[in-house]
Image (cartoon, rainbow, N blue to C red; front, side, top):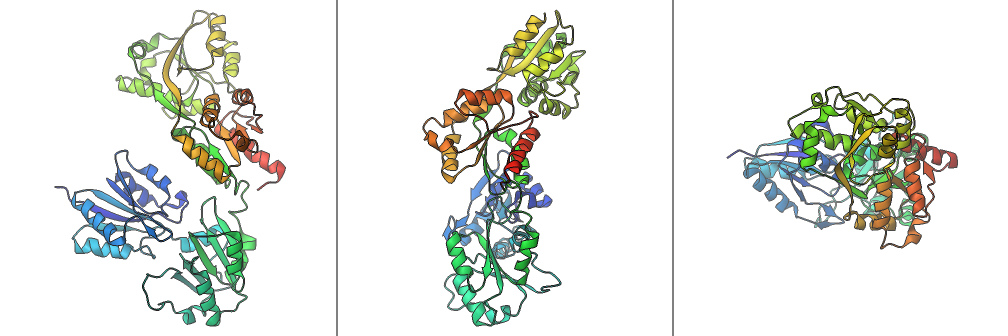
Length: 507
C-alpha cells in the first residue's frame, strides 16, 4: 500500500491572495483536505474534483472535532495511503496547535511537512495601515495568545514583561479584552497607549476600532466588534491615520452580489475585490452542455461552413470541448472564418490559439456584429451559430435577410440555479448594496429566485448592467439600471461601477 503523507499548511490571514505558492501546489495534489474555520473556503477551489473535504473548525469555543480526534484523523487518513493537507488559519506553528499535530504524526511514523503561512499577527495590522515595528516608535514586538488553554489556574502571560515591549499583538483575545487591558495598565502600561482591534482582517469586511487602553473596551462594545479579531497595543497604532490604504478603497464596505455562473464569476469578483468590495458569489444561472447526434454530425462537416459565429465565452468553451472529444481540433475548420460578438469571446478564442476574423470594433452586441457583416457580401454563405438553446433571434434573422444560409446549433442551455435561492435570501438579509448582471439570463433567473422574497428588499439596491440588452431586460421587470457599462465587458462593468461611486464620493 502507498504510504500516506501529511502537509501542515498555513492558510494565511484570510485574503486568498496571501496564500503561498507551495500551499497551492499541495492543495492541488491532495486526496484529503482537513480544514479550519479561519481558512478561507475559496482556497478549496484549488483542489481536484474528487478530493475528500473534512471541516474541523472551531467557532466561538464550539469544536466541530476536539484536537485529539483531529490528530487521530490525520493519522488515520495518512495510514490509508492518502496525501493529506491540514489547512489551518494563519501559520500552523503560531498558536495553531500545529506542534501537537506534528508530535502525533512523528509518534505514529507518518511522514509530514510544514508549509508556513502568513500570520495574521503581521498581515492584519498591515491591512489596517499599522506597521508592527517602526524605527521612530519601537523595535520590539511580542505576539501573544489572548486565549489560553482552558482549565489553567493562573495565566502564563507575563504582563509585567509585556508592559515594557513596544508593540503587542494579541491573537484570539477579544473575549478577554477587559482582562488584558486591566493587567497591562496594572503592570505599568500608560492608559493613553494607543490600541486597535481589527475584526476579519485582510478581508473586504474588515472592521477596525481604535482608541487607547483606558477607553478601548467601551469602544469595542459600542461598535459590536467580535471574534475573529486581533488586538494591537503600541504607539505604532498612531500611524494608521497616515497609512490606512485598505479601508479607504473606493468600494470598501460595499456588498456586491455577482449573479454569473460560478465558473465565470472569478474575474468579476477579483476586479471588484481589488476595489475593496465584499462579493457574494450567487449564480442565478448554470450552464448545461447539450450533446446529440446532430451536433456530432455538424462537427464532422465543420469545414463546409463559410463562417462560424460565436456569441459567448460559453459557446467557445463548450464547442471546442465537443470538437476535442470528437478527436478533432482547430485544424478541422479548414478555410472557415470565425466571427465573435465581443472582446470576452475573442479572448476565449485567443486562449485556444485562434484569432477571429471578425470582431465588432466597439458595439459588443448582436447589433454590432450585424453592422460588421453588413459591410461584407455574405450572399449564399453557409453560416453556423453554435449558441444557447434560447437566445435572441435578431442575428440569424438579419443574416438571412442579407442572403446568408444560417444554421443554428444549440450546444448548451441556460438554467436557473435553484440552489442559490437560500444564499440570495441570506445575502439580502445581511444588507446587500449592489447586484451585478452580465446577461439577460442572469436578470430573468435572478427575479425567479426572488419570487418568494419581499420585493421591498430590492427597492434600495443598486442594479449594475453589462450593457443595453441586459438593461432592457431589467426594465421588463420594472427596474431601471443605476449603472450600465459603456464597454460591454467585465472590465467595462467594473469601470462603470467605480465611476458611479467616484461621482457620488461614496467609499
